[in-house]
Structure formats: structure tokens, C-alpha cells
Length: 586
Image 1 (tube, helix red, strand yellow):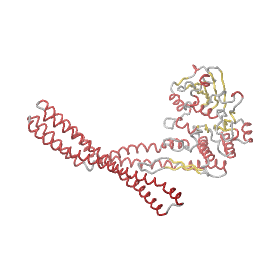
Image 2 (spheres, helix red, strand yellow; image 1 turned 90 degrees about the vertical axis):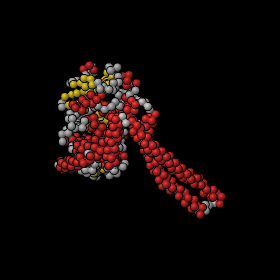
Image 3 (cartoon, one colour; image 1 turned 180 degrees about the vertical axis):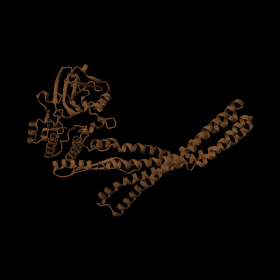
Image 4 (cartoon, one colour; image 1 turned 180 degrees about the horizontal axis):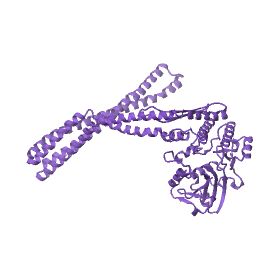
């Protein structure tokens, strides 16, 4: 795909405001000016042009466009002309209708919107870009996923070779894809790891039942007997015997209730004491710190601070700081334990309270029908409790099968990473070529070498990023912003030039603001080299934004002579030399 021209049209004025034809091979320099020395931006429209191209290729509507009366009143329509396999296609966005996208298949551009295919939803427009414009199949990363690596944003794109706030798995996939390396290794293995993690959670739950499984089985048998006894009461109408049993159960439950309640009262008291201890320590520390004023007092009074008093003050202060740190931490830990125990005991207390309430109703009631109804309710509750116990018992019995499944998944991960490693080994020659290509850029730019390394992570631990191709890129003294920006330029140019040489699908690269900080001589050498390389290849477009003072006069004259400067954006001339041909921001 070749980007041929960007057009700005006003529906309200019924005329074309600006046209920017692009070089179909080589450099496309978007040139701006500065108002003051050291100022990073100038507001004439370099970034706006890049954002417009990004918007037309499926990105979001630039925030600067929204709510601007100067743009809204002119009803601006921006159009990108592209060449796809030798035929022209026009992509259009109406700034006042940011949710829509328009496509025109025609030999000539016209502004009758009825002739355009309208995509009513932004997602539909993006899908069209993904599936048709770039021609990436469904198994490959979509263009919308790659777009921010192909069109580097000046605000976030040059912090590092990766982009901020991106999912590490997917970022690794996208960069591997751009470099022509296998990109789905980790994704394939992560599916198995996800299943393994779910089974591990289940296994952890099963193992937590180990110490109580015996009690659960005994309780299961006890509940079965109690249900049989209730059935016997209903069958033989043994209500008197049932009431005697209820009375016994009531006494036992009441005794247990009182015991737990007393325990909660005792725990609450201990908790308050721990809280008081913490408060006392903190208050003491505050009091000690007040004594910090004693040193200037002594110095003012007698001209110095006696060593014995100073030493004693420091020891006391140090002691209480230590006590707040160590004992305070201990007390807080004990408070957390008490809170958990109180919560558990309170739940048990509520259950016993329900039992007591039900038994009390039995003693008060004289209606035989109600008695039978109450017995059935009690039986249903026991069935519910029995179901919970049986669920846990059955779950524990699955331990062997779950362990077998986990082991099978581990073996499958090992088998898969073995296959992936063999595939990766076949790319060693390609990797060496990429490393060499990056070093050619560093040599041309700084007359030194850098580091570009690729490493397959074949560690198979459950939390390891198994299958991820890690990329390490470094040049000397890259902590300086200028060199960091240049490293990222060369990093991107490595996958870009490699893709052009290996018949890749991405034929353009855009860097906005990445030449504002690097040394002018380094920028000159890299830009000249890349332009010559693209001309030699006979394909590929490299778009860069620069300010006029970032180019040497000789280089500026060369670029202008070779028509590499596709836009000169500046103030003056009634703002006609700005990107839109008018000023739209303050």
C-alpha cells in the first residue's frame, strides 16, 4: 500500500483548502518552524498532519479537532488517496461525524458524498482497513493493533521501543510479527497455561479439604441418621420423643451459643487492648519527638548540648521507633487474626441462633400440622447441609484425576515448547541478519555499534512467559533523550527495511517528533542513508516531522532540491501556510 495524497476539503465553502501529495518512494519530510529557541512545538500542524493520516487509517478522531468552531463551521472532509495493488482508493473522514468512515473506489476524486461507500460505525471502517487495505489475514495481528508501532506518536511513542500501558504478551507478538519472526508461540502456550492455572486453583481447594475430609464423612453419616430419625417421627407420629430430643438439642445449642459469645467478648477485649498498646506506643513516640526541641534549648542556654543527655535522648527515641515498628507490626498482625476469628465465630453464632429459634417455636406450638411442617423444614435444611458436604467429599475424590490432568498439561507445554524451539532455531540466520542490519544503522549514524538481541523464553514454569521472544535493544549513552529517540528510530527502521526486503506488507513508517532532540549531524546521516536505501529498493515511504532549525542548511537545501519536503508549515501569510490553511487552535 502506498500513501499518495492528503486532501482537505470544506463542504460549507465548497472548495479544496489544501492538498499534500507525497513521495511514493523515500523520505517525506513534514517541515515546521519554531517560535523560540528550545521550544518543542510550534502549532503550525506537523503533528496534526500525522494525526489526520492516523485517523484516516482507522485511528481515533484527534482530540484537538473536537469542539473547534473554526473546523466545525467549515464542515471539514479529509481524504487520503492510497494505491492498493496499482489502483486508487480514497479514504475519507468528516470531522463533524467522527463515528463514520467513507470509502471511494474511483480513478478520480469527487466530493459528492453519495458516491462514497459509508461505514456507519467506526469499527466497520477499521475492519475494512484491516481486511482490505493492508490485506492481513485473520491469523495475523490486525493493522489496528500494529498501527501505533507503524505511526509513532510524539507524546508516548518514544519512551522506549515498546509502548506504555500495553499488554506484554500482545506487544511481544506485534513486535515479533513486524520483525518477521514467529509471533504466536506464547499465545499458543498461554492457552494451556490458563487451563493449568484453573486446575491448580481446583487442586488447591481440594488439598485444603485434606484435614477435614474425615470429619466431613462422619458428619455426612450423622446427617443421614438424623434425616432417618425425622422420617421415623413423621411416620410413627412420635412428636413427644421429638420434643424431648429438641429439648436436649436446645440445651446443647444454648451452651455452645453462650460459649462462643463469651469467646467473642473475650477476643473483642483483647483486640481493644492491642489497639491501646499501639496508640500508647505512637503517643510515646510523639512525646519523644517533642523533646527534639531540647537540643536548641541547651545550645541557646549554655552554648552546647551535653553528650550524656544527647545520648540518652537518642537511645530513648531509637527504642520507641523500634517498638512502633516491631511490636506495632506484631499487634496489628494479632488484631487481623482476631478479626478473622470474630468473623468466623459470628457466622457460627448466627447458625446456632437459627437452630435455637426453631426449637423455641417447637416448644410454643400446639398445632400438630405445624409440627409436621416444622419437621419437614428441618429435614430440608439437613438435606441442604448434606448436599454441601457431599459436594466437598466428591470434589476431594477428584484429586487424582485433576492431578493427572495437570501433569498432562505440563507434558503438553514441554512438548509444545520443544517444537517452538526447533522452529525458532531455524530463524537464527534471519535473527543474525536483523542484528547486523540494526548495527549498520548505528554505524552509519554514530560510527559505533549497538545491540539488538532476540531470545526465546523456554522456561516452562506456570508463571513464566513461556514462548515469548524477548527483544533487547541498546546503544551507547542512550539515557540522553536524543540518543534514546535515535535508538527507537533505528529499531523501527530495522523491521521496516527488513520487511521491504522480504516482501512484507507494511510499506510505510511514520515518526512524529523523533528528530527534535537528537544531534543534527546524527539525524542528517541517518535520514540521508535511509532515503538512499529506499530509493535503491524502489519502495517504502518514511514520513518524519522536523523543525527547520533541526536541519543543517546544506541538508535543507538538498531535501528541497530533491523534493523530499512535502509540506512547509509555518505562520504568517494569514495562516494559509498552516496545515488546514487556517488557524483552529489558540
